[in-house]
Image (cartoon, rainbow, N blue to C red):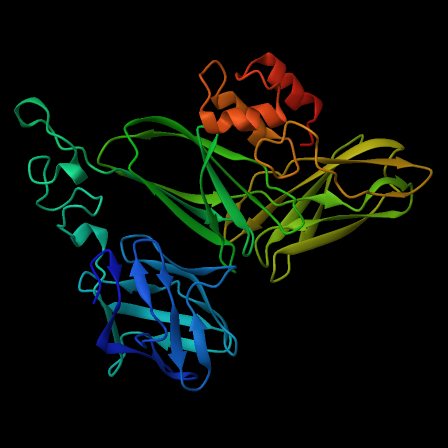
Length: 402
């Protein structure tokens, strides 16, 4: 047995059951399954299908600290297994069911099956030193978790949490910025849903931004929102729906030829594509199970000259904002779009693009003393004078890719 913050699986209560899979053992010695406040790690064993990896590279089973699991495990013979719907209660017992296309339903609390851990949800602990001020802990009994009392006892400093959840793209990297700085990243599930939490925040006003990118390096537009944090509270930001990525296959297209408009969003969603011509008009497309969409646009109705296009997505009653716009020229010849080259300067987050993310990072340090770590970035990608000013923003503007 491990602890309430880094749990192992009970030596007796360790079996889940699936009609398709049979018994699945989460407590083998070789599997070394651990349960923490953020994830499940290690391997479960199925006599019929072999090892099941709980933290594969492109996904993994996550824990929100309250015992609500999500994300995907992977079995070589079972494929992806979705843990949305599985929770760990205050007694450390797994409840609910996981599911997969091959595995079917896998129950954790059927008549004869039970999986139990010594990990406990954060809200049930009263353990000094776990980083959470809760239950009977106070500034007097546990200053490490609750902070020092100050003169006459004072008020304990309560750990504060803010969570973010929403839709990106299947297995895409989702990045959260706090005041223009990268705070945390996570991986969206196969269903494109993501969840990320931040704790140990002090009271104050923050500006958070979220973005994601597909495998081709295309990026969503920046989803930005201000948040007021009050000490001791939990703020849940839900319903985030990141815009689709978008690109075109030609930089210049002969009038009357097709141009492909493509990108990625949620699986099985509806994409609305706007084309900015003399009059803006709209076309519809669908995404496949991987969130990919492609629309071949007939350019016959378009006037000669420069045009732009952007897209937005709809799924499960939700509507995303529009993506950034991409441009193309309608003329008398066709030129295939060349691969994007990384800009020489201005790329502060090293993603081969210069856009609002880089602007936000620079803006955070505007008229402030920059950190030692950021001095290295500023020297490589900006003016190199150890500060952020209008010269640096001019460099960003010059190398802007959008």
